[in-house]
Length: 398
Ligand code: XIL
Image (cartoon, rainbow, N blue to C red; front, side):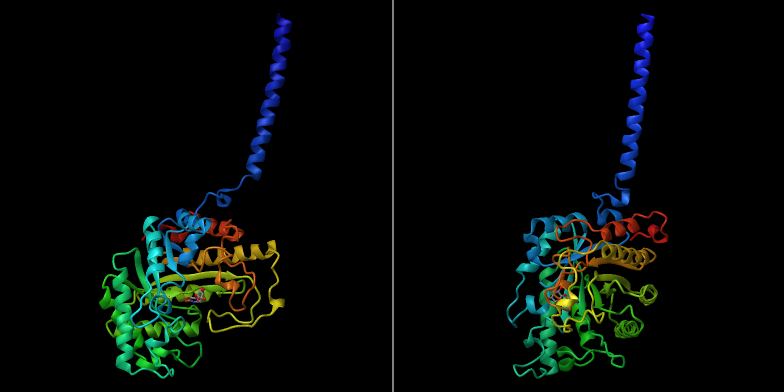
């Protein structure tokens, strides 16, 4: 008996030792290969960002027809922007014709999923119906007629969406000139109304819905020359007694830019003017381009040699992009008192406008989610930055 006990005891001991060793190896394996919290595929941007700033994506109403994309939108983001559906040409194609249905669909989606929405945009020199500021021969309309058209447009659109999840509007988009010596870009509105068309647009928006937040939105305004023009614009609107609630830095960047010091300086300088800062159209282009601009009238023509990743984006490029996003978000996290929203321009690499700009028909990879809606290295690097608890900006809540 004793012997047997001894025997079975030692047998049990051996079994226990084996079990312990096996458990240890399994635990070690799980520890080594399972994702760290920052690689957690169940992580979401909106949970990670908490209430530091809103996190959004720009979509078209027909994005909602793709179930995976619609699910990704409501799961990851707490804010959406209309990519095209609310632009003047789309929503107000003729003087007495408004097309509200696509915008209403986005509004209904935002409401259903408890998301905020931002309106893009009341006035832009692109996607602008000719009738608003020009006659059939493309001559500027008389100032009073052009003003009447502008006011009617703004009043009707803001009136339609009053009480909706739309919390703010880009009142004017891209009014500043890219030419060093020129302040305002020559646009149909400027040619018909004059330099004060911006003030008129902000006044009309305030009058149409006094509770609506009003934004000025542009690209490359983190760069010193255009930033100075944006500050001049904020001051001139304020001098006229008008309200500008936030400046939208579009954020169409690439593996080569922005200059992080320029970005940080611009956030500080805009905040010092008493306006909030929003990053409104964020993406990180990975394809070659001879110029960094988001001017949609710019084109590089179709050059196949500039489309290197049609079969897939190499890992080293995806990792460079992840690093770029990480550095950009680290800047945002240092300024959570000033920044109230960060919005990506589109949802997945499949839907990105950069597949068509500045060269049509390329295969680009600028966003956090790939063509199958799966998170990319850039997603995990952003989650990691947003989840860093000891970040100086992390205490800021709004
Ligand atoms: C782009 C859209 O993404 C495209 O679908 C459309 O064909 C052209 O406009 N800056 C802006 C946005 O403010 O409105 C632009 O959106 C991208 C550059």
